[in-house]
Length: 462
Image 1 (cartoon, rainbow, N blue to C red):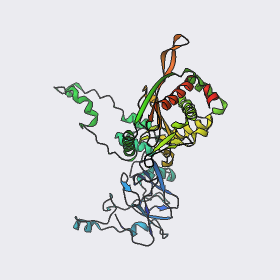
Image 2 (spheres, helix red, strand yellow):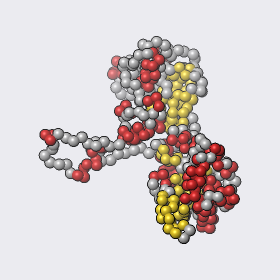
Image 3 (spheres, helix red, strand yellow):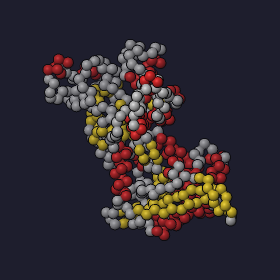
Image 4 (cartoon, one colour):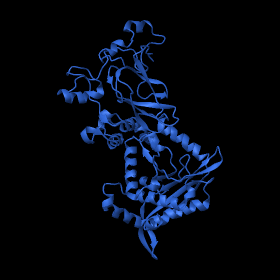
């Protein structure tokens, strides 16, 4: 790493963007050495153990150096970018950055060289963002935009595909080259669906008869063809997945879990969902079964407030919560996250619907903030969206209960003395048996089931 000694150079350090985080991975740089930056301008995106976060620079100047390449995990407090705040121009910045000559680099193959980590010795002119005029060399990510401004296509390099950071992360995980993906989003943006389509196995081409092998390959090797002969793939565990793994292990082996199940007829709830979609007060809002399940759980907690608590091991106390921060487990390309709706107990049904819609949209975009995932009290996980009947969910650390919602299916059910096709689902409630006994857990689960079977109880019980 190059050390900047000039008084005019400011080192921007990796901040703690959450509570107690010790490291973050650099996902994307938005600037390059030589670029001019202003106070508040986003210079990079990093991924912590809780969320992807964009980092703004706190001063004006010219970028002198990026100390780490994309994909590097950096400790909090470590300088990641150097900015000359003396008021120099972008054209002057590269000349001020110390770089060894090619001859000196060859003469000293061993030992430390004063270059940026991951970049090596510079062998060509530094590319900068376009200033004015069509002849300025620009970084690959900006060429397509610069071409539109100047009215001519880029010559040197192919334009970089347009995709949001979570989509790029998904493509990286699936081994998909974004330059080969056909975009379907607005303005040529590549979507998650485009990446999944590109990753889907394509039918093998029929070989010509003359090229057929005389001996067929063993059938057991066929599934490995899409992995280029590799029998294993190793994926580094970091960021959200690393934090989730540690949290789940800690929760599973700290809190004694008990899980109870109930199968319930939700036909009337499904009818109410359709009615609410036509309600003027709910227009433009996210109305689905999860909304009414969330409201049913909030009503059940109101009727049984003792379940909304946490276990304080250090002080050997049960901490009763007089508010409900309702967590919603969300599967994202970055892994499982559990953002929560603050003070969900105080929200009307339209307000709860709006909060759910915002939570889901933010999670899908990979923009959930660390603050949104802190302070949860009770969680809902909807495994039914995957066609699963139910499960035995593990508690979110620090919470007392988690409700798993299974798939809602048309099943034969005894209704008014006759077997009829009804919409049925199975609920599973896991709770911390240190502070929730079987009676309390059963009451909460029974209340949720009763409301979903007769949603009119929302009016009388709420």
